Length: 299
Image (cartoon, rainbow, N blue to C red; front, top):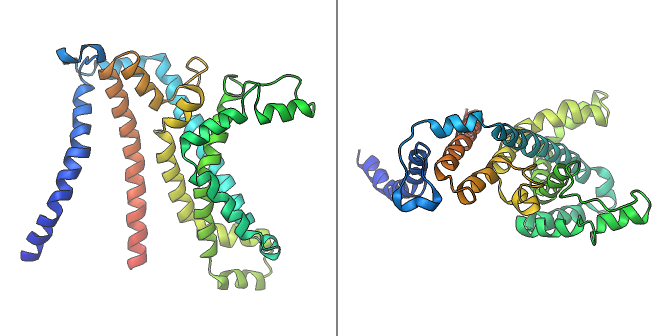
């Protein structure tokens, strides 16, 4: 009992930190979501309107498009591209060819550059690269006759989402790749040797030996990438401002627009609670996986 009390008193500072910096803002935001709080009338406060904000949210046709952009384009496509490219790059860097020519270290160092670049800087640089007038991409495509006139990649509805995903992938792919590379290096050599003795070729060893060993790290990276992407604000806002028009508007930018442009703080709070609820589901899945993994390692 004395030990338990001692541990309890040690945890009190952390408990207050969690309450005041996490729990209180969440509860305050939840309360605001049931009011008509307006940014331009903060002194008056908000009147209690119950679930009206949530009803308006789910019947709003714009929300359907915002939800589609967030879940399909930003999260599903963006995460899938990173996972697939991350796996391919990890296998490439770990390949015998690069080891033979001593290029493995060079590739690993090259991955650190985009990873170490702040997201704001990455978006600004890519906006210059994709610029229709002075951008390197357009100048190269026009020079070699691939296109006849420059393309406004970040304002053309046919190219804007692939462009945003390219920016996000460039900035975040290194972490995914290095995680998979570490998982690749942890594959027991005995398993690969046994598969070789049994007559398995490189492709068969990759599919039947290496990938099954990497499944835990793949699942964790999918979930973590989903966390980082679903509620991301910076990439879309800095790249397009949710444009052209509201074509690339996602839930994170919608929260900002409703709160600080339209002034509908209550509605924005409701949208934030919906986002938090969706992320909570992914959080529960992630925690269950981590707990099961730790239990397997212990027992």
